[in-house]
Length: 310
Image 1 (cartoon, rainbow, N blue to C red):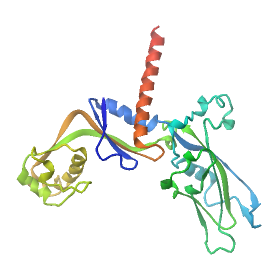
Image 2: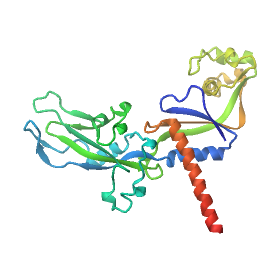
Image 3: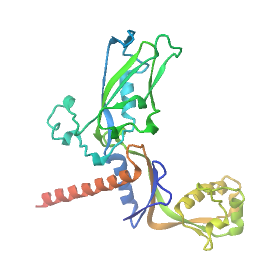
Image 4: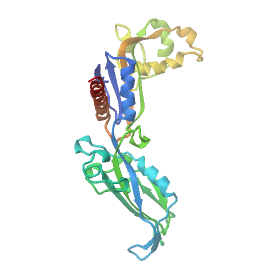
């Protein structure tokens, strides 16, 4: 299998990768590994402060808000936690300090990232009816490298009214998507056969060209896009053109006159693989980790076979 990042990508957390000299089964194995096997951090336990107390102004505040603790814990679990494989964090069950400890006591700097939050509702003399608590209000007690990313800091968590407070400690550990969706690093994971667009009937294709459509990079969809050989091989342009062809397809009233003026030809054993991460991992790192997970799985399978046949 050969892999090549498509020109112009990644874009943010999205990526397109050309996989060649392979088949659909191998590509699908990568897809499944990316969704279910690539480890990432997620908040898995939250300890809430409970009761009634006085703040530093002498006001009495209570540990309540508009959401039950269970719902708030779920929202925290779905916040993308920055995951850095080079930091050397391990799974709690693999941690030398925690593997033999009961579940409720597991957690140490080797296998856990610790966060905290302390927020109060508006003061009694404030004109604001409530205060919104955001993911950006969470503070990292562990290494700052695990701070919530700026793009995720505006994720709302809950609302606090006057006289209310919210305090908790949250614990993030490594996990895999096959155990819970909060540990899935990627979404919209899919692939399609690589295609080239061929201009068969230039005159009839003008029905599409006259619509004034453009590709995602701003190029006009016209005869010039096909070049002298009347083919488009640029993967991004082919995908854009495929979408544009819906304007002259069945049900548009243009399909008869268009008469398949442009056709898509499939390249054997080549696929365009695309997905978007949640930001906890950059897309290239996530892809490489998926390949590593698959490689280790087959190594383990080979060892099991040797043991069984010995």
